[in-house]
Amino acid sequence: MKKQNIFWKLYQDDPILKPNFLSPILADPSFLFPEQSPDGLWHLFLHTIYGIKHYTSEDGIDWDKSRYVVWSALRPFIYFEEGTYYLYYEKPKWFHVPISWFPFRKWQSRIEVRTSSDLKTWSKPTTVIVPKFDFHKDADVGDSVSNPCLVKFGQKYRLYFSANLAYVKDCGFYEPKFITVAESTSPLGPFSYFTGPILSPNEMDPFCNLAAGSLKMIPWRQGFLGFQNGIFWNPERNESCSAILFLHSLDGIKFERISDLPILGPTGKGWKASHIYACDVRYSEAEKVLIMYFNARNKPHWTVGKEAIGLFVGKVEEEERGVTKRVTQRGKGKNAKG
Image (cartoon, rainbow, N blue to C red; front, side, top):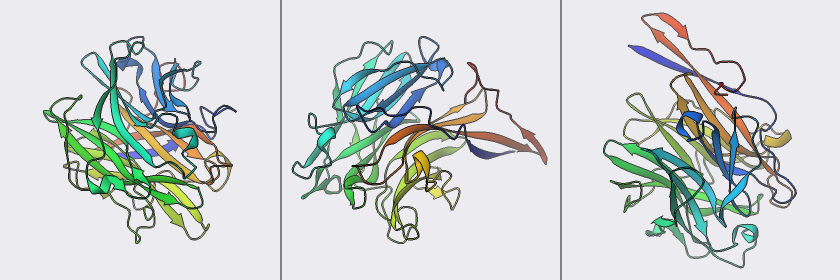
């Protein structure tokens, strides 16, 4: 029997991607390893206030000039299977993201997917998830489904997503309130919805008392690992925060926390002072490391806060018959997974 321990560390203290004057945020990254891409490069998708951007890199650290692939969309997730790339994302009303901080328009969104064989040319969008049940909707705020994450589960596919919105007062905007899931026999649907949340905020939970945020899932041994950015009120700092919670599940529905404390949380200063937001995580079997790209916020309120992209690496240590085998990470460079 082998026991796996995972040791997490920031790749570097500074962000690997910073916003510019055109958009104060770079958010919700999702990525592909070079071995998954047609050109042998790293590929990263994220959103600004205008839409979804696509970056490429030789080493996963220094990223080439980006291009927009979907306008007026946010929270992307990229999935690859059998030569086809599936780009899922939240699609709100046209141009609603730049003015989403203002209360005069109710939020209305759906989850779409586009496909590609080369990461250059994309199909027309297909709608796969719409707000359907009461817990997806709010009479005052609007209807929201967001933060897609597709996971293969046996012969089926599960699309995890966030639903509904909760107002975070000191930020001046809304965050995803619940997390739920839908199932299908195809990545393109149709999907059968679960009729309730699988993760919800709890006023007694110190790290998830305002909103459930988002969830990314990966298969792991006999179950799944989950990475949730819970939204919570920090009474010591008297402000809202967000941090990455490390979860485990045998069935992908019921979760337990591997660690009582977040594995990655706000620092109180610098570019990740107030919130550690949504992430994407992939496991490199060759390198025995978990790679996490995430976005972080420096100040809560939308009028002053900025969001940038960081890199977090989990090194796997295996124990077998009382002997510890440490799997070390390769050095930085083109072949490094960090």
